[in-house]
Length: 80
Length: 80
Length: 148
Length: 148
Image (cartoon, rainbow over the protein chains, first blue to last red):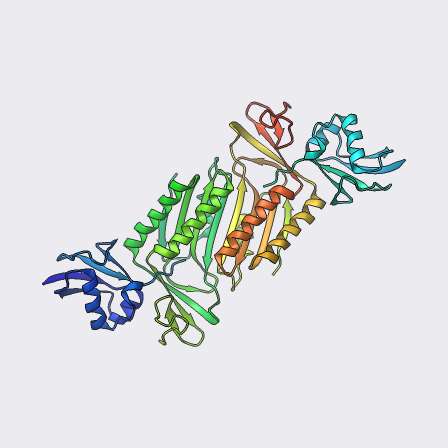
């Protein structure tokens, strides 16, 4: 069981109803965690349209999570 | 014998020592006129590097001159 | 010369930023401003909201600036992006590049805005005159934004 | 919206010109500034002199603006070129283009400066710290400017 800091932005922040939270999970990868959160908050974006950042760096979906990690899922960007 | 208004810019103005003048000539085309002026003022630029404007429009070197025409020879441009 | 990527919650002062680009060896200065348009995909936009993952976006933005400096012969490159609520006509992003020659200035400026739009975690929510709003590119049906 | 090509004997007020580009449907603004550099071809430049065949240059400049408006999907395009004596760092030419989208704004701005440099009868005389000076592109030996 890991304890993570999750950060939500834009549409995820609205769908989760909060900008961040502590979250305990049995997920071992970012991919597994996203699947879990999709069910929890009804996130509709498929993983193919989402990127993941751990501790403020983009990373692979298969990266293994560690307790205390800050995890953010990045919806399609639209700056400029 | 034609009477023309000649206008000199940049290096031509400096080499002719004046910005404009009335000029009488037997030249019948812009090309002939430029050859005449090259001798008169020692203009060194070959015609291949020069353009000609008659009455404030670019024109062909073979355009026939008419009395009262305003003629300008355009050295290589360097705006911007 | 210092080059930077920054966020601003306040209105972007384009004139002041442009002054920063002065350099005796810079013969060419190219700037890009992205402004809030009054329409998108056929809908009338009344205002726009920008949200950023500031820490990651700042890093990624600085990487783009560094890439521009590495791959193009330029003197300096700066970028400022707004966050928060913006009205029509306000500057959402400003990019300024100075270089010895114009080709590099144009290419680097375009590189920065193109990469910014692809890579930097910034999101845009459009508010329409219908009362609807939507996060751009985030709706599963992109031309049919979610209702408030 | 009015688009124009103009000459100015006075310093170019970039901030004021930029304000003219505001338009509610313009999401992208690209500007180009050509400034006086402190060097060229290995020589130190102390100041620059621009001379124009104003009547013909104004017509040819306006044609270039019209071509940019015809061939690119832009909202407006303006160009101002200095004449007279300029110091290092001064703006010699300013071009501003607004458009709905950035691609057209970049392309049109670059088209205008590229064409201006090729076609518009404007000449530039560089004054060097050696006391020499030369009309750019006019010397038969271009890298060895004529002495004053």
